Image (cartoon, rainbow, N blue to C red):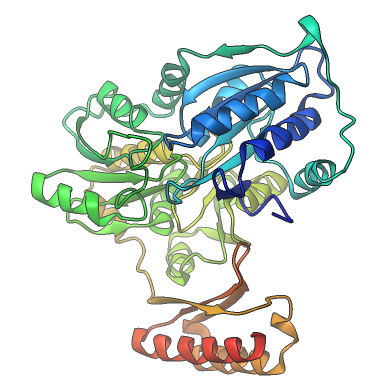
Length: 446
């Protein structure tokens, strides 16, 4: 790893590139920056269910306590749960050990500050620079000044109580299907919905350390769809491994991604007078159909680069309170500081109950335009905008699509790929144009 931080913390293959040694040193370095101005500092550390979590947790504990900083361990809890618990416990920061929707061999480290916010690019850059220094001049206390470890035995209960207070609707009589991805919400989500009175069918709620995200969760919404259609239900929710994203399924089996969820909840918040500036913040990946639906509903859409951290940054800078990503990271800033799958499920459920309409009817507020995604495999993405052939084919494609379509070409933040996304009214035509664009990109950048 020449560079540690990606678009969402540090993420790689556990015990290969993401080693215990790396985890110890980056936890030590990052925690120093987060706690150095506090007299009695402590950090919150949580993890998802993957098998490498214990190994990395031990290393992270060693790194933090070696600074003389105490550690509060939450055990298995979601990423947004850690963000909440940092604030609830009044800690100086925290770390979530998770690789989100990635396969079990991967793991990751996400830092949060005392407000439960992901770190800025600038702060991550400072931590990275200090990590790569040859000399470690950080504090090394001895004796009674070394940090201690405390277990937060009621971490799940604290987080569930917080979530319950976010809605006022009674869920009695509602039948809900939950796919917990054998991940961080395997206990939290069923307990939450049962406590609020719903009838719950739980799928993939038996983690064994190896089955997180395996053919289940938010990247496989067909699983909850199949269960909902075969067993009946009013709504289905499917989460990812660390519980920060949500994909929904209506009573007819239609899959609702983050764009549709944002339109439904954004319209409800606007009508209730709770949506600041009548604006939804989304990324450049959100479907053009979202903009068209928003126009008809009197909503505004503000777009950012890909990543829920950039959505949040825009919300904080411009005083917005609602936004998210097509992938299902939805941020209700009045409640939590990061994408929160369980919270989003509750908020969507409240809209469902308050409106008295089935979810399929609410989903009709937005019609998605056909969207085609293709990857160009290249050697170097840095010259993407220097090629006249690339610029020419992008311009030609934009002209063909006109006002009823959209072209997005962007380098991947984690792989030697250029991602091509086209939207328009004719899907077959979109595939042809996207393939032509990929061919040019691979010829020019390989």
